[in-house]
Amino acid sequence: MLPLPVLERAAIEMTNANGTGQSVMEMSHRSGDFKPIIDKTEALLREIMHIPANYRVLFLQGGASLQFSMIPLNLAAGAEPGKASRRALYVDTGVWAQKAIEEAAKYADVSVQASSKDKNYTYIPAPSAAAGDEAYYHITLNNTIVGTRWPELPPAKLLGKVPLAADASSCILSEPLDVSRFGILYAGAQKNLGPAGTTVVIIREDLIGKAPAWTPVLLRYDIHAGEGSMYNTPPCYGIYIIGLVLEWLKAQGGVAAMEQKNREKAALLYDYLETSRMFRSPVEKPSRSLMNIPFVPVETGPDKRKEIEIRFVKEAAASGLVNLAGHRLLGGMRASIYNAMPTEGVQALVAFMESFEKRN
Ligand SMILES: *Cc1c(COP(=O)(O)O)cnc(C)c1O
Image (cartoon, rainbow, N blue to C red; front, side, top):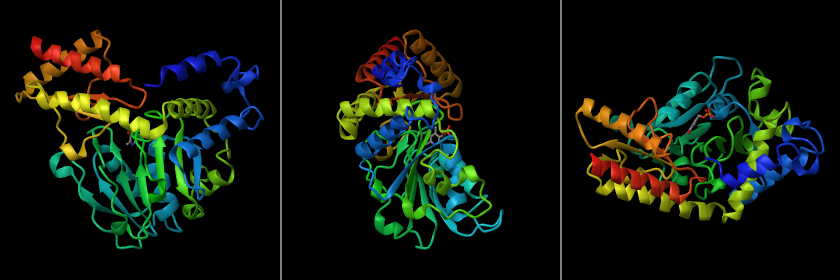
């Protein structure tokens, strides 16, 4: 979801943004009309996330998935293609972590430090210590598909000087984050920030400029940082909408207020799941996500379970509750309750689940 006031404002400004007589989609990205838009978006993100001055904010394309390639390329690849120069550490917490690991293995000497594969990724494993000379330590802060979340970051003493790299695609701005704990933090915009097509990268300055010479120009952090995200045409409209989302978020009270609301929303659903005799959460309590809440029928027979799932998703959609099918790789159901989902939306879901349970 995007906040309704953001969509309404975008609609009003569609043909005439900031009195320019143009849509943001029509502006030259190097014009005096667009510059204030990208500057405002970056300034708001810095303010809301308390991003320290020695970090750069980049607005890129390619989604979080391209960061799976860019991070190892820029920080661990060797002087010749196909030869890693440095070791990179990863924690395997499910599909997105695995994709990051697979991609990194092409450019870096990858070592998987911990995994929760033994229990279908239903918990966050305890991280083990870095040796100290590795290029980075990669985690997926919120695992969108299985619905787990790191309850706390790997302790600084486990990492030593090794920079923490984190995929924050599905939890950025959902609760406060201490940016200074990270070397690099990235998020595809489409979950909590704005429309698909923009990726936000927050990177510590000392990690910029390490890419080997053969790195494709568009995949180099130093090029994007040096050109203020305008080496080529940036995703202008997405950057504009992110700016509107950030204004909305600030008016709501910022990330601390978001966290409080998100905790209340998640508690509504988790509390119901605790008492339900029809549905349960497959995720271990300390690792439960605030943003993505999967649930499965308690029923154990696979045919009966599938039948309940199909009927639930269909009847929910008929009641105006959409996008509740679990990820295609996992099945079951999943409620994604990002920042813009109002409490009433979760209340409506719980009320529907209670009535579905009674009727069945
Ligand atoms: C959605 C998602 C991705 C993939 O993002 P794209 O922008 O589609 O590449 C990666 N990681 C996490 C945690 C996600 O939720």
